[in-house]
Amino acid sequence: MPRYKIINGVKVALDAAVKIFINNNLAAELVTNPEDLEDLAIGYLYSEGYINALEDIVEIKVEQDAIYAKLRKDVPVARRRLEDCGIGALVKSLAGKSPVSPKVLIELTREFSKLTIWHVDPHLAMHTSALYLDGEWLVVHDTSRHSGVVKLVGKYLRRHPARLKLAYTTGRPSSDMIYRLATIGVDGIVSLRGPLHSGVEAACRLGISLVANVRNLGFTFLCNGRDVREDLE
Image 1 (spheres, rainbow, N blue to C red):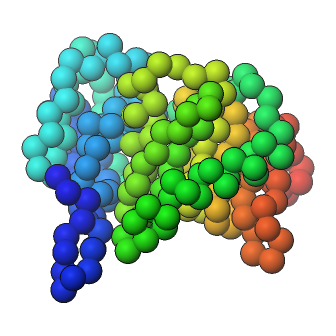
Image 2 (image 1 turned 90 degrees about the vertical axis):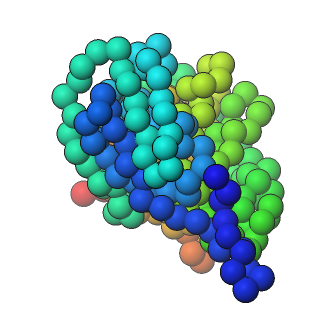
């Protein structure tokens, strides 16, 4: 399915409400760009704790605005609607194992900026999320910064594991984004936008390095991989 339509000569990004069914039970409805929907399903299943590995999935079928995931085991399904709010709950966290300095995180933003939708197709109103994996980039463009991260998790699970995992986003980092990235063990996160308190609190509690581009201050190191809950109170 294409990511946009042409209206009066203008590229307009497609957004749609996509439903995810688990063993024929409606589990979630997400607003997203209707491409890479298998990755969306895999990322959602994993980051919500329904699966622990791809082997737990029997098959995934995409039918227009619905995704049907058949799992090997019956699981209790809690129905959710993911909107542009960003408050999430931690399911599981695989702590990053590769120490990373603020300098490295910030220097890589130059490479990331060339991969953003603003650079590759500036007419489309979409967010860009990416993972820097041992020197390679994995990139997702989506109308929702939240769904983009879900797809990114799904894409990562379908490739070989990486030692160093750094996440980049053009959107404001919220707690649901931090928690989903924690399920694959990211070592650091950089946002080209200003921070949200829920995202800063989540990253600091999990010991994930977080850098955000703060207005009038530039890139600011908000969490340095240690528990700084006392600084947030």
